[in-house]
Amino acid sequence: MATVSGTPDIGALFRLHGPMVYRRALRLLGRKEDAEEATQEVFIRVMRSMHEFQGRSSVTTWLYQVTTNYCLNQLRDHSRRRQLLAENVLREENSSASESDLLHLRRLLSEADEQQARAAVYVYLDGMSHEEAAELLGVSKRTVGNFVERFLTWARQRGAESDRPKKESA
Figure (cartoon, rainbow, N blue to C red):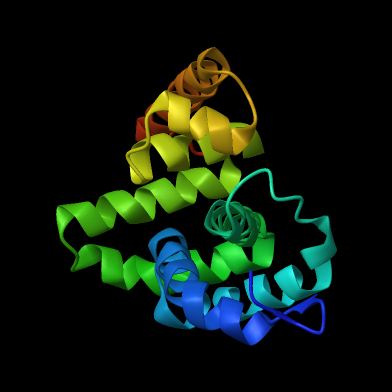
């Protein structure tokens, strides 16, 4: 890692890894403006917590995790979630199936259990193996499988609930 007088050079880190962080944020958040804001926030957080990086993984892996966690937290934020949903409703009507699927996935991720959401992102959105996801999550492959299965079961239940007709109050 590039350093200036023994401290990490955040500029060099940003130049080297900024595009990856931005792409990750854009994939999870879906809007250019949100991804730009997330990229800035991730590097601010990295600058503040650089002393916590222990070198057990690569800087890329660490930034990937920080970015994923930040974006999932953004999706969970109630006011943020309402804003994202309101802004994307019209876009969803005119979007392709894959964009619609991503919007639906973002909605689910905003409400899901944190560990299950992270596992689902790594396995389904990023196409990682259970082994790769386990390394990032710091759990066993079996635990990743359990997280993913619980997420799928929960997501199916949510879909079944939203498909039921709403009863009108008397």
